Image (cartoon, rainbow, N blue to C red):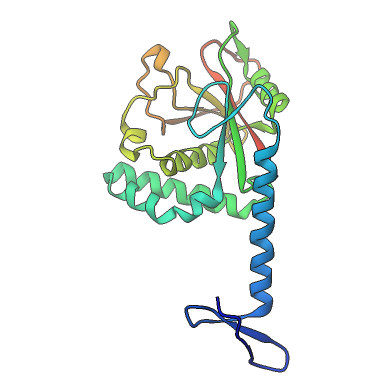
Length: 227
């Protein structure tokens, strides 16, 4: 960037960038402060102790999975291209992503830029649906919904997983994940290898919430905000 300042008006200084563009000095300073704040935040997060639940870039039971919406946004065109190259199912998946991303953008308090998700390991006879939701509140900020699940899928594409595999191959996760739908209902997401369900990771089924319903096979899917 050139250190060339040009007075464009009585009120405003402009800076000429290395590519020849003119930018208001106030906007340049604001962008710099935002980037500095984001970089400082990332360093603080990286230095925080993680206890016995590490952060991973690969989805695993018993470990926190990091979702970075900034990375997703920067990779939007690549995600779209990979989805559309995967045929009709891929195009439908991209439309699903677009709707979820729009909802998240309109509700920033619910969906921060950094999110971590957690899949419980199954070590009980059964849990009721209410107990599963309580478990998610205990470990994080609650139970994942379908919007966070779509973020997870997009993050996995950013991490190198194939769209075709996510759409067509049986999920390798042993158990189906139980989620809380935005309308308050109960959803069932991917998983089921232990029972040969052959659900792909993108599979999402919806049902009504029954707090006393006993679930013997599935596991709750939790999330927490990263500030």
